[in-house]
Image (cartoon, rainbow over all chains, first blue to last red; front, side):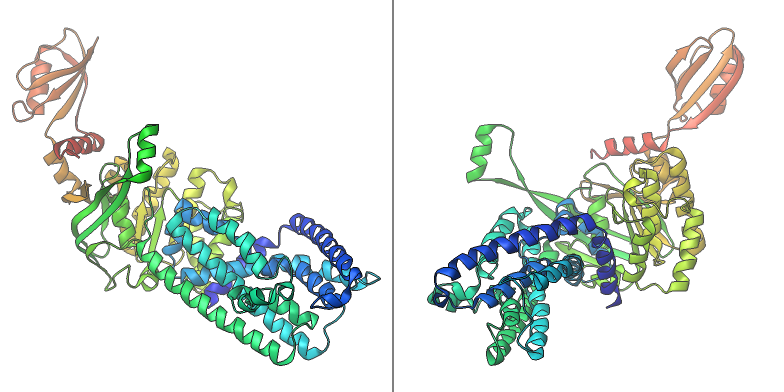
Length: 267
Length: 324
């Protein structure tokens, strides 16, 4: 365990060096958040009754999404992992007494938490003090907030476990570009990255809400905003637990199989 | 103790000739060729031995090393290292070995070398006092003091290679696999690395397996040599044995003043200029002592030297002999 923590630590320390990138990220997130909110407020001005979430819920959903983007984004990849596989540096990784799945998992979680730490606070600060209807509010009660925290952690796990599948697929395809583009567009959409899932047509929504994608940012964001509460929240967290376990198990098994077949080419 | 028995490994390689039409054709049906990287490789290495593993490019050296490190699973055959099968008990096995792949890097590119070392310490769970001591020793022996705080990316190749070797030894492995550790090093770094490896083997009893194309590495380091070609072990013996086998030729260089001497049976002129002759001798016909005596009788010898063939030439001759 200590070894994996060490991987986490060096990765965290490494990522936190990039302050300029974080600053640029924060500015982008402000701009993006405001744009989305302006769009939604235009819709809500026409008929606030026509939508499945209240405007305040949308405001909270989007600000949390922007603040914690680094944790939940499905289109972010550890380029180092792709490089390791493509260049054959994986030979060294395999010559270490570590489980490669665990190592890459820790590394991914570390990068995401480090990036999030730098970006979240300034975004939340502004979201809580801006005047007018775009101001973010606290969750309904402390219990709901705790559920949000738990759900956020699980969501991070599901996102990373999913990206692990893409990393492992590189052992077979040598290039992950196809998978990456797919994940960027489809998964992000199905996870509620573009539009919250309640806005989906009911039939599609019912199906999507059972997939692992619904166990990603969809769950913590809706729990924070109060759109999901009580038993529904507990069920949602159950779904997250299930998908996390399933994805980790499949990924780990697949990795073992891939490593049996791996051929480090050249010298 | 390393025991390999009947290890076989094949790779499937897609091949096609150049040209647009063939590229289109390859879309439909690809020619897959099976390459026998290793066929029936067996050898045993005792604890504390230092082995030179040589062979031409593509002979299967790196493949063997990768199998012994647990990175590659062979198609058939057994490999037992200290009681473990590397690819089955990979994590337990690699804890006790050190590896240097000369063509790759294990150091983090952007952070100072010592940070990479610290990470390796944590991965192998090396105790702090033992780590400090090992690091101190390595720093002194490989002359790392100046470069430990430098990020890897700003090191020269020779500096980086010394750090790579140190990185592979931080957990004090009792077995070290070196895959071309002196590739691209200058003369000074090469000698430093060789001395270090030699010392490690002598003082710590570390088993060393070394692949290289640099025959001076082999001459300086190893007593036992394994020659591999086309996936088979062709020879297993000491450098001297190989040398005797490869060729008996000797080279005689004579510097003289006076009339050029005439050559007799068993001597062939390889090179000649005013006052200097290089003669290839066949000692079976004309031993070196006799050749010198004959030349001395005809002219005044200023200087004379006799040498066997270099390791480089010997290996080239061996490759030719085995048609590899």
